[in-house]
Amino acid sequence: MPLWETQFVNYHGAVLVSPSFRLSPEATGSDILCDISEFWAWVRSGLPTAVSAKLPNIVIDLTRIAAGGESAGGYIALQSAFLFPEMAIRLVMAQYPTLDISHPRFHSDPFQAPSRASVVAEYLKGLKQGDIRLSSPFPEKWELMMSILDEGRLPELMGPDDRMVLSTSMERSKSIPAIWITQGDSDHLLQCAARGGMGSMWGFRLMSPGFRGALSSVRNSGNEHMRAAVST
Image 1 (cartoon, rainbow, N blue to C red):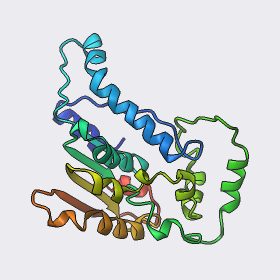
Image 2: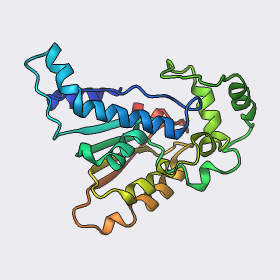
Image 3: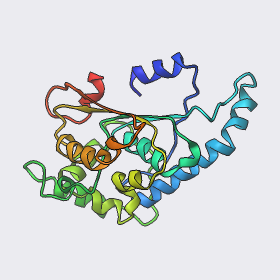
């Protein structure tokens, strides 16, 4: 977690809660959204009791929820706001998130040579039915995830669930919170797709009264995805 997020939590006297959910490619997009749905249901019904049992002086205010994350976590934060209106999330802070996997860039030929197709194929070959992965210490699965993105395999592995497309989720949502998206200016994975995703996601919302959104571009050296986090 970036230092500024911890400082933000401390400044506002907030409680930080991090969900555990199944990860791709062991899990599909539907699996992941199911886990996130169960997490928010627990936040609403179980978190206040769990906290008060350990820290009786702490009162959870569920009317002031902010969601944030980096990369896939930023995507999950945005989806949380769009798909779970009962949580009334008031702010989303997403760092270099995948904005829209329906963008042609994620379906196209490899981003760069040489091809990393064998990395993806070998990993998928080794998976057994029912395998679950909840975490991997960085950078253990870094090469795999970069290979999936570089080879345009992300939409296929996420599956056909149309809720995975952020623009679709946003269009269906009746209430949009304040949104701040930070994107590295040299991010080779998301730079092109971010522009397209931002246009499709926000085009109609920019004309809506009261819509609050901001996109920040930060300078990051090279073309690496994760370096945007260091810059922010």
